[in-house]
Image (cartoon, rainbow, N blue to C red):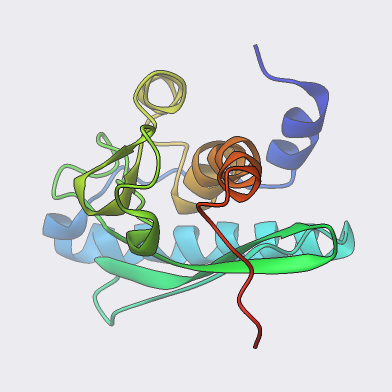
Length: 164
């Protein structure tokens, strides 16, 4: 089901242990530590493999995440805002990742720019609670979605390169 490149990418992301969401006070603090450790490891691995493609930060409580993600095609860097909230039922429920500026530009997206992860990612997430976290959502959710959708949107002229 998972290709070799994805398997290799996943092997570099630590699995999480604490099953806790934002309502779980002390346990949530422990879960957040695991989330940050997994994200740091994933970003480090991506940088080592010259595959750096996103930056994330969160609010103080770790319930709202935001940052930038980018896709490089023909030596041009297409950059997008990324954001998501941690659901109150996290980690049982995966976060809904949004790229707001692409709202309405593809059928594989819900209102507000939330990317469609229903068919492929959510069943995988459900089988891996609580081991999967935000880094896994980026690696198995947003990354593959962008790899399929962004080149198509560029080719159709829906997404155009913006000079910095």
